[in-house]
Amino acid sequence: MIEKKSFAGSALKQIKEKNYHEKFKQKGLAIYMIGVEFNKEDRNIAGFEWESI
Image (cartoon, rainbow, N blue to C red):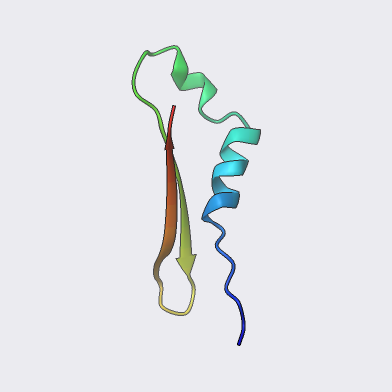
C-alpha cells in the first residue's frame, strides 16, 4: 500500500516562510492562511488546512 502524503501543511509552511501575509497585517483585517492540496488524477481538492492570524 502506498502512503499518500498531504501537501496542504507544506503550503502553509511556505506562506509563513515567505511572509506573504505580512503586507496585509497593517490593514487591521482578519487574515486567514489557506493551504490546499489538489489531486491530479481526480482533478479535485484532496485536502486543505487553514490558520487564522
